[in-house]
Length: 173
Ligand SMILES: [Zn+2]
Image (cartoon, rainbow, N blue to C red; front, side):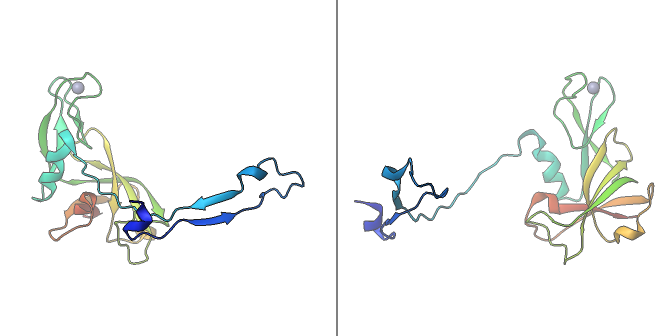
C-alpha cells in the first residue's frame, strides 16, 4: 500500500524550469519532478552518561565538580577522567560561589530559555573550589551593572524546567 493510500497526500507532480534560465537546459530531461509531502517526528533518547550524577545533583540543589586524586584538579563541567593525566576522578560538592571573570550578552537565547525579551547573558565564572572557569547563564542583573570580579553564586530552580541546563544559573551574590 502506497503512503498516500494510508492518508498522506498524494505526491504532486510538477515541471520545473532551469533556475539559471539557460537556452539549452542540460537537465531538460530531469525537470519533471515528483514532490512528496511528509510529516516526520523524531524522539531522541539521549544518555548523559558519566556526567549524569552532575545533573541528578542539580535537582537536589547541589553543585558537583569532579576531583582528580592524582593532580588535585577539580573539573567543572565534570569529567570522569582527568584530561591532564587520565586518572578516574571523584565527585566533589562545590559551594557554588565565585567571581565573574567575563561575560557576553547574546541577542538570541537557546530555544529552551525564556529571557522575557532581555539579552541572554553568558558568563565565565571562577567558582570557589574549581580549577576551571565555568560558562553558564547569568540572571537577575542587567548587563550594564556587571563588573569584572563581582561576586556571583549559583541559584537553583525547584520547579519544572524545559532543559537540564535551566536547573541552575548564576546570579549576583
Ligand atoms: Zn589529574
